[in-house]
Image (cartoon, one colour):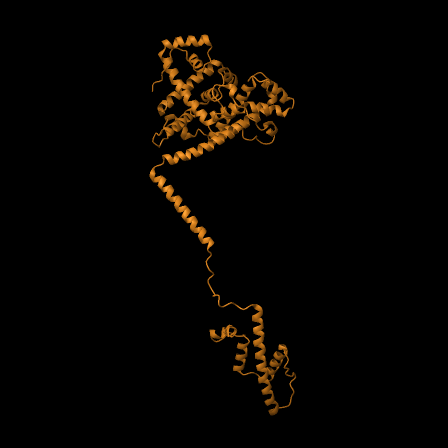
Length: 259
Length: 190
């Protein structure tokens, strides 16, 4: 576009007239000039439109705090003491900025509204669908968190015995086994006493409740007369020193408890 | 500013160690300095920082103020220098509001419009176009436009603040308005 240059050389007067900074005499003189100068007329009108646009931008940017054309109406505001903070930190946000922030917040909402108003139908549908999906998944997730799945494993009928019960049962069985072994040894002792020397056992078989004595006697009897293989295996199995030949043997204790 | 206490008197009090006195200066001029900074820089955050830096610099250099110029002119000069310095730094860091792409667009004035011209959108586009157009002006032209339109300073006040002759201020403003007119016509909003 070809620039229209004012040839009259009164650009500065035009600017002063545009901003109202000519006194009365000067203003009247320039108005007379406008009647004769088309270029100045065109430029004056064009500059007026530009000013309007700039003022509109200014008002939108700064809000209504800085009111146009009226110095007296400029609002002052309490401001933090920058002098006090000068040596240390920068001052707090000025009120104009705070107001601008509020305005910008409102601007953000209106911008969001504008976005949805201007967005095409498919975009609105996509956003709505995405929102629905989000809420559905959120609901499912919350529901799953509430309903904890049942613990897989043993049923309610079988409850494991407590440690004390187990210990008592084990002791009971050991005692019973040792008593049985004791009886067997007694019988064998009698037989051997009749058949062989009357060498008194170093240790007498005591039918006390002391498991250690019985165990010691059993051990000594063992030293005297070695147990047969079958007896050894049986004793070991009874005392759980070896694993059972089949799985059924492992469940003996549980079976007996259940019985 | 027809207040009982002039700016110069307040500065005198501040020089004697009255810290609250300088706060009065800040209170009086903060909004206008912010408006100037915003017009120069185009970004609220940058304008806020520039405003704070202006008053900090003024506070630090209070003793250098000899009263030869008005306090307002002195503050404006500091603010303009702060804005120019900020823009130079930002340009080096490529963080300026006047990004290279924006400047290129401003030169060709390719309007980044994608939506149909609904009325509200049109006004938003116009505002954006004006902002681009002003930001694309050379610094010396942008100064006078911002000081005139944002701060509503008189030509005399602008001349004092920028330390320029009155005629220079007016001719710069004329040139600035001319360029803005051309750019906005190109966009189609003027």
